[in-house]
Image (tube, rainbow, N blue to C red; front, side, top):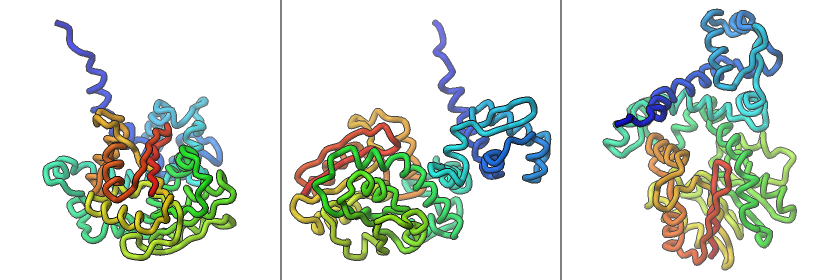
Length: 332
């Protein structure tokens, strides 16, 4: 009897090595330095104060991953590294990659305990207690890394999120927990007559000014669990509901429903699991990530539809966008 191909298991055994290779190169500033000019390993090692031989091994590994190219002894970024791993790029994932290295990589080492106990790993990994976002924003640098990471995903996803359904009938969109304003910016571009705003915690609003300067995005500081919601005929929740348990979600959805006028809408942007929970892989990995660092999870369209119907919404529709985030539109 022939044995099954071991490639899947071998690939998963080594998968974290590839991630850590990229994280390490990023943490040393390799992609930023090679963005300015190609360099050989010795020059780069002197620049970042590392051993020349092992720096060369790291760079060659990045070549094998498709992150760098090599001509003779000289290394350069590939287009994908220039687009997504250089901090100055408008589409950068550098913040989220750095956050993954500094925070999530360590927390995922405790996945066994998270599954055993059914709770996040902030206290076990870092000795931290308190509110969820006090962990994400625990230092100015961690706040910037987290919000920059969310911005990178948002720039990629938000144009598809706001175009998944025709939102032209809505006059004012308020993005609850909207971070850097990527979704309102995308909505303003697609719907020129629409008023748009971000409603988020004060530290996030402060950082959002860098990204919304010169735009018509209004920035409003507040806590959507505590403070009255700014008036709108459509609210957006992007990567918000997956942070919380069902009790808090029910509270938030009821509050949003009460604040909306008749005919108003709620646009939800999340990774959608298939209704039979058989995939996709990226949504399941994110669901485990939510276990590791929040009190939430990823859900299927039907699971969201049930919660929305319970909150009083009468119409729900979901779409898979092909971007990192899918979309649910609910109407009052």
